[in-house]
Image (cartoon, rainbow, N blue to C red):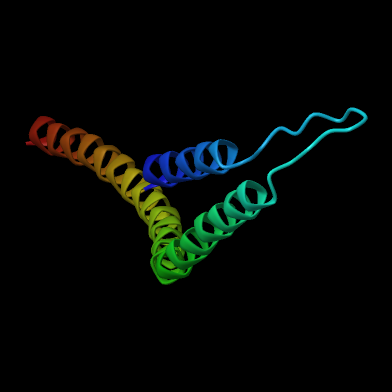
Amino acid sequence: MERDYMGSLVGAAEALKGSTLCLPVDCGAMVNVQSVKDAICSAVDVMQAMASSICLLLPKVGKISSLAAELGSVSVKEERMLDVCRDLLNTISALQVTECSLKTQITQLK
């Protein structure tokens, strides 16, 4: 999604650059008013299209943000549970060693 967003943003920036006029700043510089108007209208159209796209993406971004936060919470819980599991496995291992030792002692006492 970020890649698509960046691609759209770069495309919009290029479109805006393409519709911008570079005017000479000299004495007696002349400008075609219609060309300037067309360029500004084109830039406004591009910005309106961007605004529409952004408005369409906002709910998706909000949902993804919510899901990412939930995923982070689940990940923290999973890590805690894995720590508990690791501790339990260590306890089981120690108990197995104790059991084997006790069985050996019982066998020796017989």
